[in-house]
Image (cartoon, rainbow, N blue to C red; front, side, top):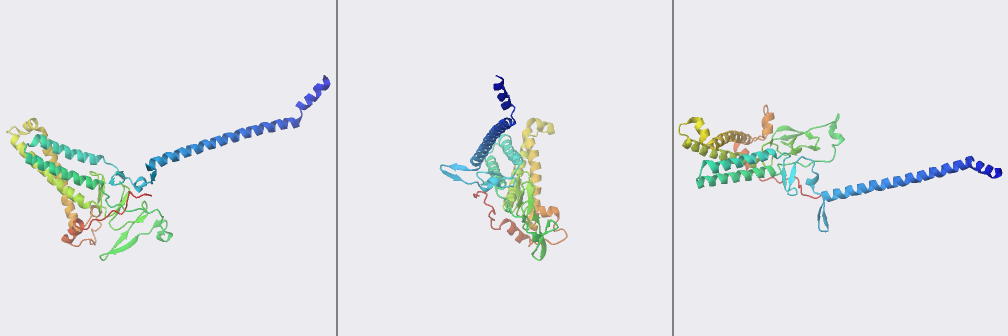
Length: 338
């Protein structure tokens, strides 16, 4: 028995056997870890595949067996909101446009219900309302003149001390500077500016109208002026007949009697008066800008305060150029496939 136990003890305590056992354990652990790594790699690959499939389904439109590519308005870096697959272009914040629409609608409703029962007056009010809405929609959904962006950085020859050099051009004998836009990576054309609200460079930028929620530029400026004129006629019309209704209702009871007898008409008269003064003043201001061939941005910054305006060609020529020049097509096809 002693002879049998001795070899067993020697085998159990043999260092070669211990090393072999540890080698087997390490090999098993490494094999298990490799299996876990493979499984984790497969899991990550599955996640990536699922994310890619989800992204492809979101950004691509399937029509039968044909897959339509991603369109430009899907990836446009500006803050505009697109509708009807890029056909309509709106500003980033439509809340004030909604407020403007509700104000006009309520004014027409109060006028029809409380001010007059004459069919002719109601019909003309409805006609003016439809014209105002048509102009409002066209101004707010049309491309104001967005300038295409550039994906390439400026060349080293055009930079100096880390800043991009400006270019100089001559217009009617006057030297003008072309500024470089670091966001769009382009030299902005003459009379253009980068709108910080919409995050776009707009050709012949006038201003960003908060009550419409859209930039006013080269392509929608004449529609904007027409909107101001029609809206002013609309509010003056409502104010005139509201005052006539108040005069008929006033029986010598003063303001308290008016508040008691026709509060809706009184509120409508006050609102239409304020709106007519605001819109009318804005329309007169833009008539002056058109006659002198300026934009509101240029006039506000007094760019031609000390120098001659190189774009001023006389009142008649300025009016023809601003209001009756050929329609400028859009520079960007937002519906194009990329």
